[in-house]
Image 1 (spheres, rainbow, N blue to C red):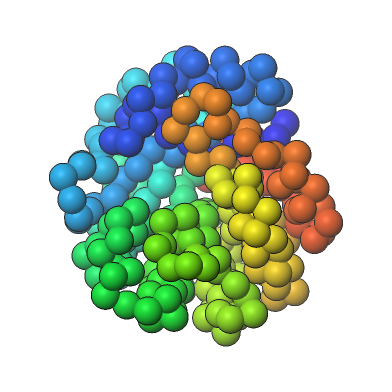
Image 2 (tube, rainbow, N blue to C red):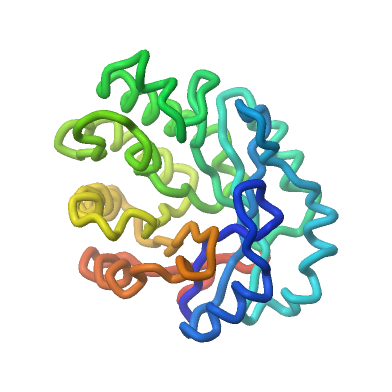
Length: 258
C-alpha cells in the first residue's frame, strides 16, 4: 500500500482536520496515512507548535491499531542547538516515523517575509541549505525523513522563488550527502506540484540524490485538509520511478517498501 507519509490533524496548531475524516478520505483513495503532527520548539510567533506525545498517543492509539492503514509520527522542527531537546521528545512515545524539517531561520518563521526582507535570495537560500545540512547531521541518528527540501520556495517573496540546482547545486549536495551519511530518507513533497516550474525544479535535485547513493523516498502531501490528502501522488510516483527511486514508509521506526 502507498502511504501519504506527511499530514496534520487537529493536534497540530495549524490544522483542524479530524482523524476520522482523514482516514475516510485516504481509504477512498486506496492510501494509508501517517499523521505527523508539528513539534516546533522555540518557534517564533504566537502559535504554539508543540504537543504532548503521551496525549497524542492516547488520542489516536485505538485508531492506529496494528498500523495497517494508519501510523503515528511527528514532524520535528529542526534548529541548530535543538538536537538534544528534540531527541528527548522522540523518546516520549513509540512513534512510527520521525520527520525533520526546517521551518525557521534566525528567529524568523519562513512563512512570513521577515527573513527575506533583510537578505538577498542567495543569502537566504544558502543560509537555509547550510542550516539544513547541519541539522540533518545533528538530528540524523533519530529522524527517519527530511521533509520538503524546497519549503523556502513556498513563501519566499523573490521574483523567482524556485530552489534551482543549477544555482545552488553545491549547497544542495551538502544536504544530500548528509542524508546519505545518516541514512535519512528524502521526502518527495507534493504540496507545490500544481505549479509546473516547482515540480520541474525538484527533478534535478532528486536525480542528484540518486547519483549520490539515495535510493528511497517517502511521498507526502503535507495535507492540513482532507481534500489535499494524496495530492498529485500519481505524478510523484511516476517521477520517483523515472529516477529509479523507491517509495517507502515507516512503521515502528522500520522502513517498509510500498
